[in-house]
Length: 48
Image 1 (cartoon, helix red, strand yellow):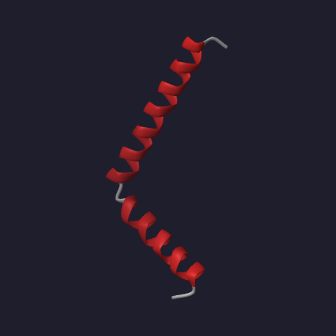
Image 2 (tube, rainbow, N blue to C red):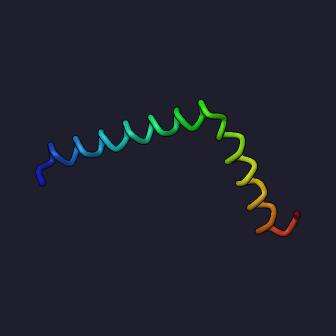
């Protein structure tokens, strides 16, 4: 693949990723993911 094609593919993937991040945030999933991450970290460290 040429450099131009690779650059275009990277930009498309980055835009799609940003769209999904905004969509998840708009649905209120940010708090859910953060709570799950905190619970997993506390269990791995052994504080919880």
